[in-house]
Length: 323
Ligand SMILES: Nc1ncnc2c1ncn2[C@@H]1O[C@H](COP(=O)(O)OP(=O)(O)O)[C@@H](O)[C@H]1O
Ligand SMILES: [Mg+2]
Image 1 (cartoon, rainbow, N blue to C red):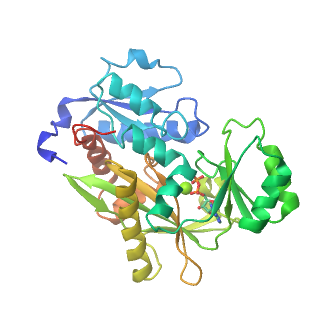
Image 2 (image 1 turned 45 degrees about the vertical axis):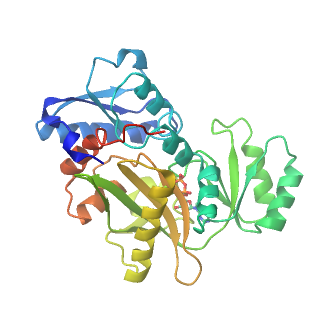
């Protein structure tokens, strides 16, 4: 990281890229608006761009740096990153390879296993395999309850618990013709949903305080993520220090393992009595002022407008070659 090469961002036009056609479009649009507003109030020049109605070919001379507020497929999976690289436009967050690896949960989980970091056991549902053989694989390798989710999803969309074989059969059948295409089944792990954010500040990677959530729903589902009445959040976490320190250490290891850049959020299920496991990584955490990244940053002494500016600067601290 070479902080010295970061230009004065007050002289730049910042394109806040958001929305597009991903399933996470609504949240992304609102996040982009909040980020653009905070940067504008801080005296910076911003341009809010909805990727659904803006062809990438028109972006080159519109702004100097892209603040990525996109999520999910087509946004967080390396494709936008590749398109921006080819056009020579600096952008925030990870490069193409880390974005793609981070988006595909089964692939990143293989890296975790190789590194000896706990993650729930899983199988990928192969659409060419019969429902019966998937059921028997889950019965013998994972057991019930089991957790079903898209391999490249986000926001708990299309995720759920299968308490028994009958429910799993229904869920597998429902995955057909789904835009997420590939689904996975994980062993069900009992634990408190926690997340840890990491952000580069002036050339140094800062590990933010742990954020934990008690969901009033059966798990931390889409509804609980969008309705504050359905969850109780703590940041800094109320979990014991030894546990939160372990989560922060694992988050840093996950950052290095992925080869992430600038920012990352690592999601866990944490428990003293059971196991602490890494669920997944988010290479473009939500930019919302009330979202978990901004909440962790505030708890770590970084106000929201500063967080957005630190993020913009990370576009200029990538190594010369980033796969
Ligand atoms: N294996 C699992 N066992 C139990 N709950 C899970 C499991 N995987 C995910 N969940 C629940 O679903 C939520 C979202 O899962 P996550 O893997 O982070 O996917 P997303 O990309 O949708 O955020 C978690 O916070 C947790 O509540
Ligand atoms: Mg998650």
